[in-house]
Image 1: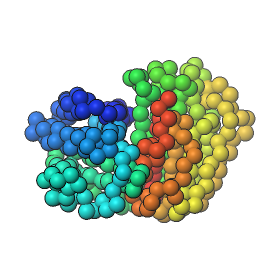
Image 2 (image 1 turned 90 degrees about the horizontal axis):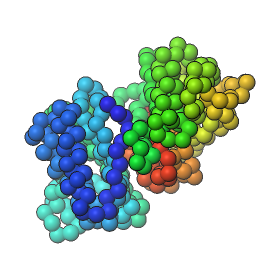
Image 3 (image 1 turned 90 degrees about the vertical axis):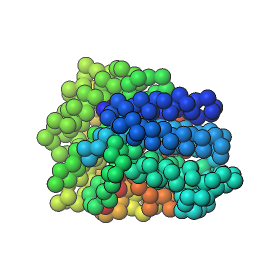
Image 4 (image 1 turned 45 degrees about the vertical axis):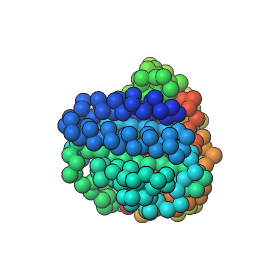
Length: 337
């Protein structure tokens, strides 16, 4: 399955029926029963109608995804409305701000396998919904290691994404790749997909060595920028190395270290000497990596209590506030549990 999210601006009620039909058909394609697809319709209808009623529109991101042997649909609903002061209260059945029965958010919670909301007053709201093909499936709580979420969207109008990411995990540690092919569209996608293939197959652990390998093997493509992060649980350090403008930050609480990558383009020109930045690895840290499809002038302390949220909520909150809309965009957020 394609890991990118389809995205729609919801600024007119006439779009709601179209988007509901799109997601309904997608649900059937990945194996949802007609009944489960109909339940998905209800969720989408509630999300989109609430955007028009209470926030004067917003944005819906969705994708089909396979995780834990479960076909699922993931949806992010983003708005710039007045926000909620008490999220727990609005999740209760019977709560209404407009003299209705107040079953909307409660029905989303009941029909989905995972439903989360984050909101700030006068900032708006992000909602995350996971709908699995089996309604009885219980999403297991994350225990230890790297808990992560990624949002990737295409340049408007393109069918292929010029950004890419991949995560390798083992008992010994993990490695993260985030890359951005030059430009957008098919040629950018070709470059980043080849880089991901090389990353997946590489037996190297040090990011600098993997980047050299990628540089050598992508010379016939348009080229790309990329950052690779490696963690060995034994050494308890982050090894970070990048070429070009992938923004990488590691937060310990609300204090962060921003990694400065080398100048260059993989496949064209890179420095002769590459070395990793070493950062101590600790539980409860948050790593955030994103392409230049998002603005870089943000900080987690802008978001109230955001470090308590799961990676998807953190990613979508940053995405909502900083998406440029002029390029492919990818944001990866990982929490160390």
